[in-house]
Length: 92
Image (cartoon, one colour):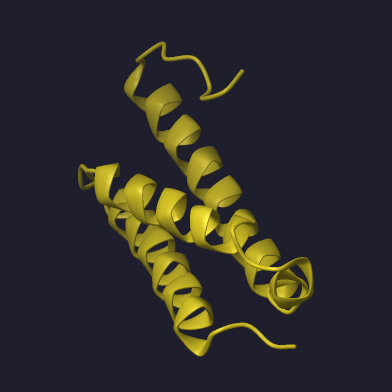
């Protein structure tokens, strides 16, 4: 079995949003991440409701998205450290 192509496309779009957020942060801009958070949640819920075999086809795409989100977190932590703000890491 294979997954619905629209799910793979949505994963790609979410990954692109994370990359765009990183670029904006690198250029010194403030970024509202609420839309990214909602889209990540939605795509994860979609994948979570799929038959296991279908979800297996998306492992590489999910790993790429996770890598981009991890790098976005590191970029945010670096930016906060540079600004002198003391904000704990998300989820820790």
